[in-house]
Length: 309
Image (cartoon, rainbow, N blue to C red; front, side, top):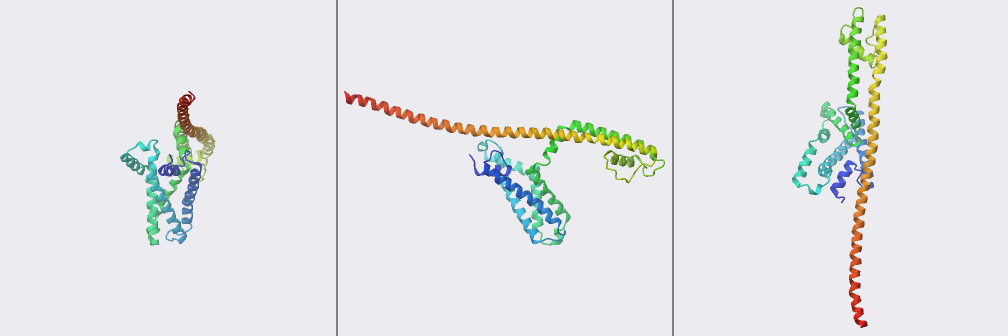
């Protein structure tokens, strides 16, 4: 049964189990809230830190109102994340809401709301320009992660490929240390910029990552030859993490595609089960009607026989 609370939860979470019209409304709201967050920062960057405009103030009030209503609706409907929510007692539901408010995503929402409320309530433009308030509003950007899951695939890939990435980083660190030490002993006698191994490690970092700022360069023929070898090694070495991460992304998206198919199949099975129950209920009703008709017919037959006699 689609209750009001379940509809709110499906709307906020963009559940695939929700009706198509609710999914469309949820998508429109996600696009609107994301555009509102981005526009808030774009308009803010075009004004002075100690100055505000009516347009920006109205946009900030709109964002504060929308996100406050969403926060309240999320706390109210979070109990629908459980399957048998009707069997959960009232105290357990309150406990679930408290756990939701203590989660990392809710804490980020709370901090972003506090920053918006402070910026809206402060009347003086002098205090409005306090840097700390501006920095707090950066937490609003993390709301995009909940809706669009930007960082989740990256974190999953890093977790799944941590062994390969750790081995690559270990080799890179070893190569950096060896090349920096060799360059220090080759260049330190004639080049004052290589006055320590730490300074040489800065050069090694630039060379291995092929950035090449040019603030510190070798001057001796031996140093240039060593720098060439390190540069070619860096090109090959730092191509390995890119390949590992790209293969991890391919695996994640293929699994996600399969998971979407499974979810769709589960939804179809649930609809079929519901349809089967309805059909069985109708059949049971038809059987009851047929049995009643048979009973009436059996009672009428003896009466007809007696009248004929």
